Image (cartoon, rainbow, N blue to C red; front, top):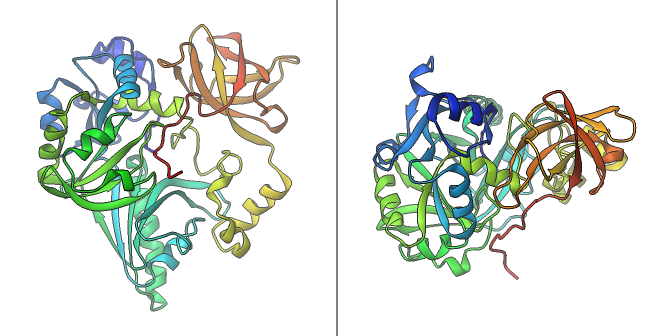
Length: 414
C-alpha cells in the first residue's frame, strides 16, 4: 500500500537522474528543483543525502528514488534476499480515539473491526457511495477506543477531508470520535523488508517478533526509542513498518544500518517489488471508478459486513459479488521485449478486439521478462489466457498470469 502514481522512471533516469537499470513506473515524481510547490522533507532527508540518495519530489515529499551504491534492480534483488529500509514517512499516519471510533470507521470501510482482536491490523478501503475505492489503507485496532491508520501520501488531503467530514457527522449525533493527523514533523515511518528484516529488528527491540505475526502491531522500544512496530509491508516479503517520533527516526534507521545485510532502498525498488507481489498502486490499479470486486479485492469485504450491508456502496458491491462484473484486475506476463506500461491496450489474441488495458507494468528483476497488471473482460481473466498488448504501436503476445508473480513470505501463524 503506497501512493506511487505514474511517471516513466526510465525517462526520468535518462533525462534527470542518470539512474542505470531503472525502468519502473512512478507518478508525481519529478526533480525537486522543478516542482511548483515547495516539497516537504521527511525526518530522514539528511540521512538520504548522507548516503547518496538521488532525491526527487514524490507526492509533495523529498524522497530517494535510489541510492548511489546500487541500481534499482540490484536494490530490488537485495531486498528479496536480505533486508532493505524504505523511508515511508510521507504516508499519512492518523490516530483515532473515542468510544465510538469503531462504529465510525466501519461506517466508511467494509472491514470487521468489531471482530478483530486488539493489536491486530487489516488492509481495507475507504469507499464512496458507488462502491468506488477512495483509498486503500491499513488500520490497526489498538483497542476498542483507539485506532492507528496509515494511508497514502498521494491521497493525503482527500483522506483527511473524508475522515474529518464523516467523523464530524458522528459527533453531531453525540458520538465520541476524535481524530489526530500526525504531521511528518511529528512522526517518521520506515519499512524494513526482506527475509533478514526480523533478525535485524529483533537485535534492537524488546518486542518478541516471534510472537508478532503478519498484520499485528505492538508498541515497544527499538534502538532505545519508543515506537509502534507493525508486521506488514509492500513488497511481499516478511518485514515490519516502524512508526517513530520524528526527531528519533534517524537514530533508529542508523542503528538498523549497523546490522549485517541491511541497506537503504528507494522508490524505484519499492515499485517493482510491489508489482511482483501483485499489490495495487492507488491512482493506477485502483481509484474511485473501480470497486473492490472489479479490482479482485473482494476479500476486503468481510463476511459479517456483507450480512449487515451497511458500508458505502454496499448494494452495488454485494450485487457484483453475487452476479459478477464485466471487468477484472489480472496479472500479465511477458517473457521478452519492452515492458507494458500504464494505459497500454490489451486485445483478444484471436479477434484483435480491445478487451482492456494495462494499469502498471515493469521489468521483473526476480523472474526475468516483464510483469504487469491491468483490467480485462471477465471472460478472459483465467490464468493462461493468451492476449496481445500494444507496445509502441506493435501488438505483442502476453499471457494472463497468477498473482502474486513471486511467492509471498509473510510471517503467518501456522
